[in-house]
Amino acid sequence: MRKIVLSILLVGLSGVVSAHPGHDLVGNNFASAYAGFIHPLTGWDHLLVMLAIGIWASKLGGKARWQLPLTFLASMTIGAVMGLAGVTFSGVETAIAASVMAMGLLLAINLPIPAISRIGIVAIFAVFHGMAHGVELHSQQSYAALSGMLLATTLLHGAGLLLGSLLNSQRAQLTKWLQNGLALGMMLVGGYLLIA
Image (cartoon, rainbow, N blue to C red; front, top):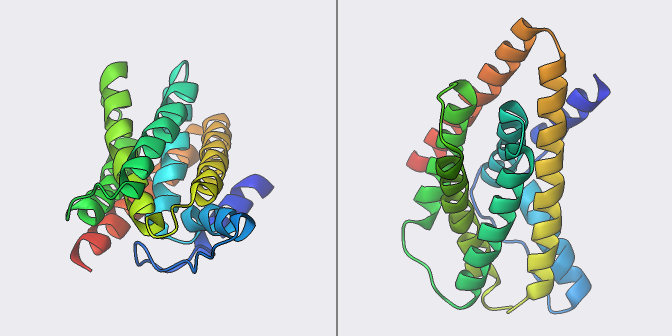
């Protein structure tokens, strides 16, 4: 129960709803790595999607428990490197907001999705998240910040897997209620980000 409370506090204490506020990245590697680490924890969009990937992977079980988080990490890295190189498009923020809504929907429904399609969905979402990070870091050319973001993302996926495991071990009705509540919250946050 303490772990669930800690997860809820982590979500509740995350930063503003604005998708990508400035993070005051500075030149030295430690400060850049710290700024990169903090970034996924200070925006609802990143925090929710990264936790949801872990929860969804836990809900699916089997190979999905490692395939989905690793796919997200690898694809986010590719997107971030693209962003660092200056590759982007104007719809990145819209795609990120849509990913929040879509992950909420995927948590709410039990639609049988083939493994390759699940991996593709996660990879696409991750590229957009990574690209947004990379564009922000473009002026710094900071791979230290990227490593910090990857570490925070890994921890958030782990927290999602843990939360998903805890939910699966609880009574079925409570699990369904909590997952549906989180899914609805994600769809509302994603919708707000789309119109904000």
